[in-house]
Length: 290
Image (cartoon, rainbow, N blue to C red; front, side):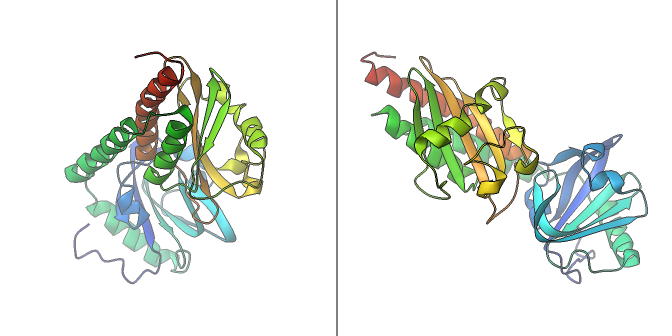
């Protein structure tokens, strides 16, 4: 956005500028706060988003809540205003977002969307570098033992995606759970965590299983459910040579958010590199050489 278009008089910390790239399909090109940080990494179908689906051109929809809710895509907040400008939309989120009157929101959103261009090339390059660096870090985890490699992979992935919880479940050649040392921990035994993770394996067998709002999860199994304090979850299959398993990370209610396209690319890259590292650790424990 140009310097002439200032949103400093609007108290909302986050602004998403969603351009229509196909009928009903919106792409975040710019904004501020999370909207700027996530530019190029949020694409949604308006018809599949309860809030966005109710917004038409020239209208404003507001929602406030005493507890965080998912406004759209991976974005969670307690207050939001969605502004329809033609086929595009602007979403203001955070404290104060729903305060300004419709006329002001429509004028500011229209001006901002009109000035927004393509996602800057340097932002795209920086995002791809982030995924590459996370994969490289996963490829360097220690391989002295399977337990150590799995725990290191869980912690590295959780940190890379700023998640509250990270875990690795190896299913074959034997069942083993590793949970990241830092962050949120369920008030449950390892057996209970394993029991909650195992049903995710078939669903994630073909690739990432992304659950942006655990209230709507088809796998509401405790102690890894919304009722336990988690809000969003991403699960990736692990396919180390000689084994299989899951890599799981989740955001907790203390810092609610979902998973952007970049988050998902990082997750997939880390799972692949981590799977290779786990394969070497498995081979060492089995007395083999890869």
